[in-house]
Image (cartoon, rainbow, N blue to C red; front, side, top):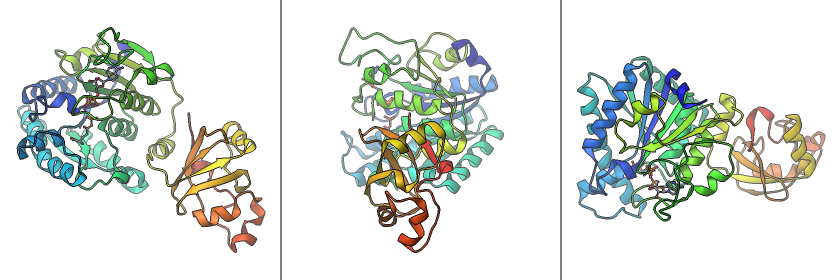
Length: 374
Ligand SMILES: Nc1ncnc2c1ncn2[C@@H]1O[C@H](COP(=O)(O)OP(=O)(O)O)[C@@H](O)[C@H]1O
Ligand SMILES: N[C@@H](CCC(=O)OP(=O)(O)O)C(=O)O
């Protein structure tokens, strides 16, 4: 993938961050929003299907409620988000309708994406909207989230959306020109990176989790989002939403922002869904033999290879597997509850029935329900 290939892509997810959407915390920057809509209309004319992931509800809600600082309490954030989401959607809707284009609101929680049935429902709904030429506008459903089921930042939500619909391109528009080799807010000599392969280890260290006053996650979550997006073969562009005509320029292959080239091995659709489970209910520590088998021969995890476990999980819930040095090896859906798994760990599978009095499966995590970590 290089910039000149961007012209030949079909499906884009465009993420517009809080730092960009607001006039320094004073509600939405409507002029800028109108300009991005005009640019997305240009993309649509070129045959691109566009999905927006837009932040801004909390900032707009703060303005409407007369609050000067972002609330810390969850219930106040939820109140601000629900008031502000009205204004956010209204702003997009009124701009797109000037071009006779319909837009649609989709509010998601992490729970929606970790339930396989609901995940497929969202996917079908978004794809149907695209077939009808509608522009879906996605945000986290802040009103119902608790800390356990939140994405936390919209970069992650945008990457999961890119995986969900197998987007070719994820554009993350923010308040900086792109990814710098150091945080430009703190280091005036930081240099812009025009292009990097997403597998490069050093890019994570360059990206600080410190963002602006309104944004969440800073550049770190953007780099992690690019890695996640790469699992569906999606290329990520991080660019400034203030740059004139930035989206058509990117489409034309111009050297705006940072291109993060997807060079990680793509995962199957089901593995992407598994990898998208952000919250695990427990962890297992595996012995070296089990780690080798998982990494090299693509087999299921048997109870005999497990040395210890923590957490509280039920059958079918997500757990993370570590090696003895604490390195993540894989994650997957476990076939036994914590109490059951605790009894059978370290034992051969033929003993499961005599220990528990029943057998669900000879494996603790079946290969089809597991994804190896990077
Ligand atoms: N290496 C880096 N390159 C560019 N920006 C960085 C870097 N490290 C940290 N940042 C910070 O990340 C901020 C953007 O993240 P954030 O405030 O969360 O924005 P958004 O709301 O668009 O997601 C920038 O304003 C910048 O201060
Ligand atoms: N969903 C919330 C906050 C999400 C958020 O700020 O994320 P980001 O734009 O990645 O910094 C909103 O619309 O205000």
